[in-house]
Image (tube, rainbow, N blue to C red; front, side, top):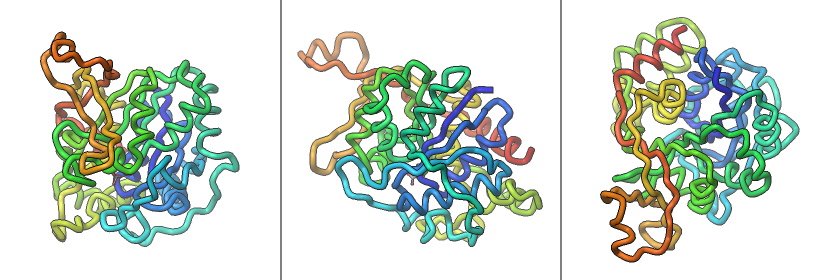
Length: 314
Ligand code: BDR
Ligand code: CA
């Protein structure tokens, strides 16, 4: 199996991602690191430990990471993820504590100790990853690829043009994009499209198997915007893990991407250059070379929904 590490801010859809990673036979979840985002980092740690227990994977090491972004203050998303940051499902408190090392230390240790290059899957603001890359740049020699949920080509959610994870810590995202490792950006353009139909969500909830029931309850987490009672459920961050397990379901293009770091209404936007190349940028005398990122442009929705259901219902 592919060794993977998830860096998350659990998070309704981060929880869906963890459930999938634990159960997919082609993935070996070596560690999970936590960062402030949807909720404060201590709540994220508790949520993560609880989800792994419910998923039957209490042995996966979990570490607490950054409690705030590099420059920005913490800006949680309880309006989306509930008071407990995970849909207020009344889940039990975890029965164990996180590792006694911090996230950056655990990331370094697990990456360098892995028998094969690791795929890192950040589904949260990129603070931990930026700190890792700056503190221990040698880790890149055992990183296969970083597949992150964040950014967007053509839309935003935190603001009109910025996606939450990048907006929350734009400097950290910029550090990631210039790290010199292969990167896939699983952005809002695909993220928002992978929806599990209401019938399937109902079936999961009624299945009686704890992990599958939890996935169903998370998917049914009432959308605070539509307020729908028996809703279909977005896979959200879990789609990025599907993309690692089954890359053929994602259409990507290698494109220059830059994070807008300027103060103002576009701060945190991922500026994706889709002009025909080569030549356009040079033609206009643009001096700077932007890093190339595999940007997700299309997704096989049915394929990922099927894959997700088959995996958590295993
Ligand atoms: C991202 O922000 C969080 O609310 C979700 O968990 C996801 O990682 C979407 O913008
Ligand atoms: Ca997340």
